[in-house]
Each structure stands twice: as structure tokens, then as C-alpha cells.
Image (cartoon, rainbow, N blue to C red; front, top):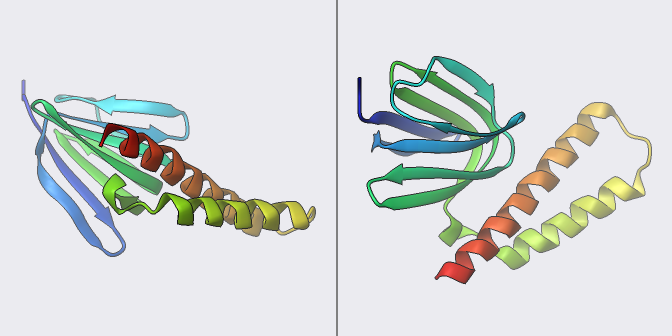
Length: 140
């Protein structure tokens, strides 16, 4: 029985994390999951939300949006479309982006389903950034 996980957090712009951790909590389309050592093999689609990496007594939050996670033999590979640390979030900019996206969705009642899905994904990402950015500001 292993006591640690090897986490690889990768985005299209590069590797954000590649290290040993105790656990990883991720938002998926079917809800939040926590991966512990010796987890069963798993592949899941990520949704926009908060990812938490626990290592000892510290917990590192990230905002992730889109992508997939694969768990196999105590390796957790997170291939995220985007990932940001809360300290990098500009809450006001995220709020403005969310307003623009919501207005764009409301202004076009009929649109291509792929365009609609992309807009909703972007809106979910901005809302996650707002929620996590505000939460992080409160504890700082």
C-alpha cells in the first residue's frame, strides 16, 4: 500500500505541478472526487471548479476548467484546459468577463450548439474564478 500519489498538473501552456502529494480533490462532471493513494484506475472529465492538492498539513487550491484526469498506479495526471492559482485571479476581471458572457448568451436565443457549449464552459470557468478568488481573499 502506497502512502503518496505522484501528481502531474499540465495545461496547454506547460506543467504547473509535478510532485508527490497526499491527496487530490477535483471537480468532475459527476461531482467532486478525492483521490487517495491506491485509488482504483479512473478516467474522468473535469468541469470548472476548485481543485485542492493536499500535502501534509498544507492545502494548495487551483481553479481548473475543462480537461481530463487519469488515475493509474498512484499517478494522477490532470490535463486541464486551464488552471490558475487563486493568487493569480483578478476577481473584478472575472466578474466583467462573466457579465459579458452571460449577456452574449442571453442576446442570442438561437445559436449553434457547439458555440453555446463553449460559451457556457467559459462562463462556468469565470464563475469558478470569482468564487475561488473571493474565498481566497477572505482567508488572506
